[in-house]
Image (cartoon, rainbow, N blue to C red):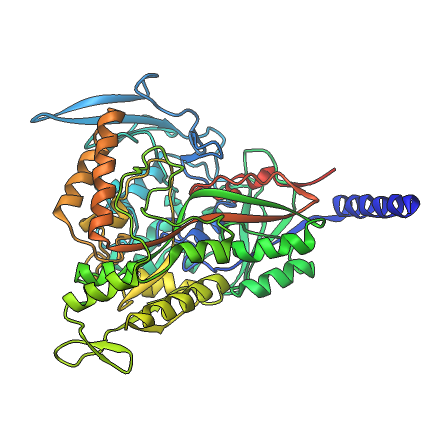
Length: 550
């Protein structure tokens, strides 16, 4: 028996050695295909996972949740003189923040990355018809002072608590400017989507060389990359929207690795670990990500807060957490994760209480029950639609559980799912969902909810669908709290504001929080260097660290 064990161990080591000697291409599986390749259009996680092999923002949060420089040379602070308070008059305080671009940074065609690219990227973002997300940041930029080709100063209209965070991905001015000739058409005519293989669009360890829409993206080494050279000659990111099929592809070696945040669901990983624990390394990364359901505030049914409260009281989120995720994905009561220092434990919490849900529906006019479905005085049925990303087995399972539980209190639910690129690019991004939209948000530590809860961030045709407030939530009180918390530098004062924001969110309930997610990383034992962050920085932002075990 002992000899047999030694033989098996030898074969395993030999197999690992052969992988190390022959592996020059890495195939990664994900469940979503990006809706665009432009870094500033659409806030889709799959897009950043794909693009972070090819470019970097100025700053990012690392796995220890520290803000670090990526494209810049040093993080500017008030203490080191890189950021300076400015007097804007009338009692207003701004800040001038100076960044220096990595000296050796070049685009893939050899053109140096310069402050011209910074000016151009901000010019695009400031145009109200460009379709760029994060419009608030661009509105806050008063001007850009160019010091030299590599150094610039951003003059901001306020000094906020995250003043030196610059989550800005540059766009190459020397290539892309002709596409911006008609800003209202830029969303569809930008170079990243019309000339995707142009090496001059990229400056990371890799560049995109081939795209099969909905299927895969291929990468080759970027010869102008100034950092540590990546291990793999070629990378392929394959989209397999069905999570069961994604798992099957990993087990059959059709793919080498799958994304932790865009891979199989936690319940699948738990089952897979029991069967294949010796073949893969399993890691469950808790993070600042929560699954939720946006409620369209323009829907007359959902405009009534009593209906929104009835919806959450009639679902057993604790049972979902325990039965589907073995408690590893706890019930969410807020958009803020308990792992975040700003989480408030005193916020209102909604228990599973179908009796109370029925009472709330009665009070809101849905009192007549016909064939198990509630109707109002006009005879209209209480029917709502819920959508999510097609092919996600766990989301579809959760949908069915919710549908059954809502039916118990007389709410008729229609399910309408779509491929992720359509769902996020059109249905959610353009607020085309009539009722409810289920998906996840991921954030950074102490992240402002401006993009998702401020009324100025509601996407409309007039602003070319900029913003991420997809429910269409409008609250003067929330707007004022967000405006104030962002410019409050004292942490204790800020904590009180965070508490007020979380209480208002729980009271108004524009969103049903479901559970805080843990991302399952299923890693082949020969693949090393992947370091999950638990925040918005995808693991591919450090793709040059990935390698085969020696």
